[in-house]
Image 1 (cartoon, rainbow, N blue to C red):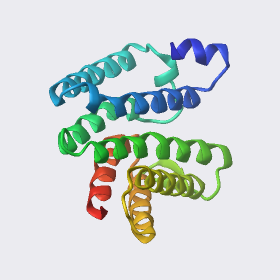
Image 2: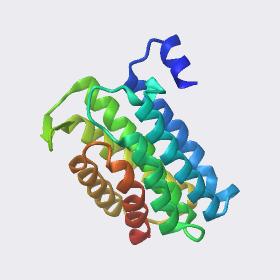
Image 3: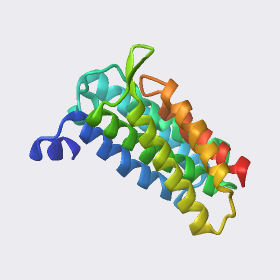
Length: 195
């Protein structure tokens, strides 16, 4: 499906990957309400196998044909599995929060970083940018504040800033898409620590 969208709208692979990332993020946020943990684990394992196999055989160009070395597509279901193991079934909010940060903050960092290229850095041979990290930071603040507001959680703004800074640094230093493994669990842990 994403290959059709990519071709129809002449999207670059990075854009179609981010569409898949956001759509899968939203979908994953519904899983704690529809499946038990074992079902989530099996879906994650299945997606690890599928994404690894399709990358190996060159299928799904929209997800796998990027110019940099990345394991983000394969790493994402691992991150979901780890977050599910850490937080479900008891801490649905922490799980959803981690997935939202991994989905939206990471997407905004990549889009802004690629478009504006402000303050480019070379981290372990991969390009990162101050602009992308700033976008990650701001998006994380917005998500954290919105969840607190929506759920009536009284979190100090300094705590929100600390969470956003911690997660931004964690995302900045992780390369090759490996932040998809750690950010959902780290975000959920940071969120539960401050509530």
